[in-house]
Amino acid sequence: MATVSVRYIVDDVDTAINFYREHLAFTLVMHPAPPFAMLERGDLRLLLSAPSGQGGGGQSMPDGTRPAPGGWNRFALEVSDLAATVRTLRDAGVQFRNDIVTGMGGKQVLIEDPSGNPIELFEPTIPEARLATS
Image (cartoon, rainbow, N blue to C red; front, side, top):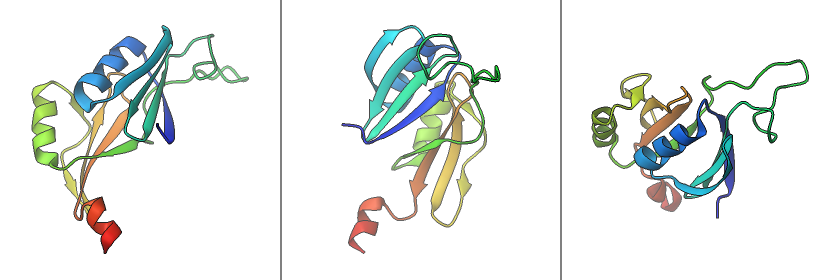
């Protein structure tokens, strides 16, 4: 069961579902209406909402501001081999915001879903399992 939920505003829910399932191994939990879907990967629940007058996640604010995809806030998915993952995703035509960056904690790169929402792929210097036993 997912323990963390993240909502992303997307332009097209069906296109986003296909992207997250095909490229990032998410599973579809529900898709009850065209402007909403729920997916999961491990402990992460991803809520996808298209701007609309239906439901809550895609509704405009009281001042008329409409939800829109993009920005810089993101969730991070840990991968065991970032270089291999990048090659696979590039070959599949996935959009990248940058090349691999190496920092003190590991390596990372930002990809975008079809609406321009960022996803960080992260390969830690020390795998999480080793951190817990140190």
